[in-house]
Image 1 (cartoon, rainbow, N blue to C red):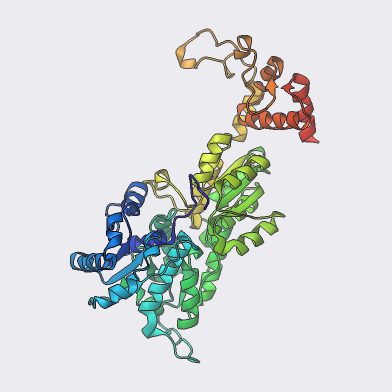
Image 2 (cartoon, one colour):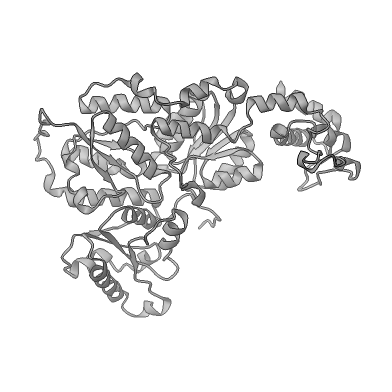
Length: 521
């Protein structure tokens, strides 16, 4: 077993919680000991939801293991149904309770409750959170859609001549990265195209909505991590095609419009619909030294990582130097995307491995999860969050989608602002020798105070020797401080790496110049 401080995904029953919490009239009875009962924290503290998650725990303790834990589960299931009267009862076990093998599905069925029971067998020691969400959604769709499966050989009936085309939007869940805003943005876009949204699921749906998914002409697979398994079954069972394009970025949204219009059998003017977005013009209008060939490292769930790489390279002019995911179920797609950039994909759920790769690549911008945000802070590299797992600050009160044309504008602002504007870079270079414009100057609002003296006049070095790293001589440290602060960290790291490679114990002014020449060659 490998111990870790952080993890990109929780166990699969957390994925099931995300489905249940996203929906209405659904309740989840979870066989779990004390200590596994953290759903309230996940959803009310991170996503700041107004309601408690619809989860009831058996909460058995160590002393209960010598008695009948199965009876504890049955009591919890009866009480949950009596109190919440859901239209669908999900039952399952947490990773710890899985070891007891009490069979929650069989126990719930024996209660003969007047409500559909969805038994979940989620192998906690082989699978993780996104798989658990996808499996739960698929099992629910299959349970409630059995009556509408087309007989072998029968084709789906054609849409009535006077009927509008319709679709389902599938995949958004609780704790999803900007899912609520994405759904609103894409729903509006589909309405503008003349396409009706039949059901959005799981987010905001109830069991009756799931039972009428078959009515739509096609499915919009908005988040493949959650919806892939379900849409594959629906394609086979209902004859419903589904989208393959993710509407992230200006070009991605244009491609998405083209695809949904083809599936709906309608004509659409993509260029006219694109005129509302400012993102493309903004990206084209920015000083080229600001964006062009900025080295960017991208890591997250597969959907957002692949889309971010395309937007970064093809819309903003960045150079993608690293691409990876923790979503092993979609590792093949990420490897294919990375190959297009001449890269080998990083497929890992070990944040230390990701940090090591970032340190090696020395990017100028990181696009990642909350884990990469912490890594970026330590390495002093600009960062923007693009994917779950996220924290409370990634559920903003403002409207902030990632998808559609408005989402493209949000991406531009979110990714570009952490970097230094080209105009500011020019001004820093122009005025870096000014008596008021340097690191040691007092703030202008404090008046004409005496500027702080250089630290190097009082101390032999600003950097102490640590773990065998070379120390900095005074003249080298002083010269380093003349480099603009937004690239100073990179210059420091490159110089120290060069000194280590050369076997030097200290860094002189000559070493600094040699390192600069080495990395420019």
